[in-house]
Length: 436
Image (cartoon, rainbow, N blue to C red):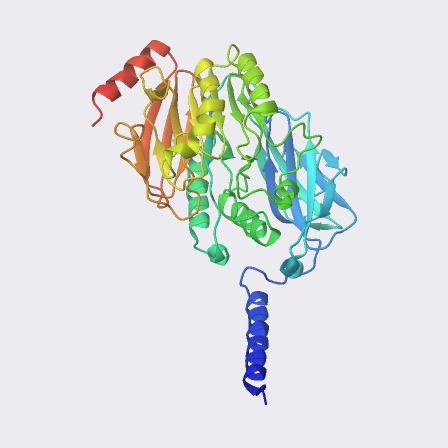
């Protein structure tokens, strides 16, 4: 007669283990019950094509609420809502999409679109949801004239379970940016090269927004706006819920006009890089190049990788790089490889004094990977390091100045790009001839 006892014991053990697995999942430290309230959380500012006159101000609540208001003014009002000159009640709101295990973190997004703003102007804002307010903060619009402008460029701020830790690498890099932001008030925004979190689920985006708000906001409550790009870890619906823009014309590719004579074309490597996007890119570069002193591009997956296989960048080298070279872009930025790089000047897939410099490759919190400094485009005077990093780029009248900073605030790299093409070629050739 068949003895069922061993099988019964096995079934019981499996049920116990399955139950234990559910307990472990429920106790995952980043999925925590949030206090139910309409008090605004995680205020942030988004820029896109016209940061001199447009912005989206966003926040979250853990209850849906009914009445959401943005108050704003060009004078500080200490969050006294009766004193603000402007009041906006047309707010785009909705529930963040949740995974099954994220139910305890139920939250709602609120986006306030502003246009007809004045350039180079500090706006003081407070947001209110059903009578609950966060306090007064501010942001500064981009210039519409030809004054110098600065911005941060960096990406890959995604973390694992350490996203709940107070001293994680993302928060430390955000602190580095805050300190630089306070010393350099000409910085207008962070142009993020994508991959904010491991996946665009609310239990991860919640901590990204928390870290950005808490660690990049200056002591005088100035917010650091974001130019968003989309990467391979940003493909869930939460990314679109977090970075909403009214009447979006395409799938997260656009031109950021950061002053009268500087533009950065922000592209999407996660959709077809040919087709509509390439047609748009060619027309955009054709229009922009005669008008702009400085013209750059920014996207997630690099054309010239510092870690991944060289072949990984082939599609961008075929689809986009010939256009970059035809229209003589000044600087190209990317992420994805979790490292820091600055290439040699490149033209026609070789080092050339008349070529383009590419920087990257994403180090705003994710664990750095080992670079391959032996690749021809990373050899001196190029740079490749396995470090956390952010680039601070200053677009001046006569040159672009690029500085890279590490997780302890140390300078990792310094580089200049002269405006005058003959002077630039001479400068680049001197670096190529004297690499050390």
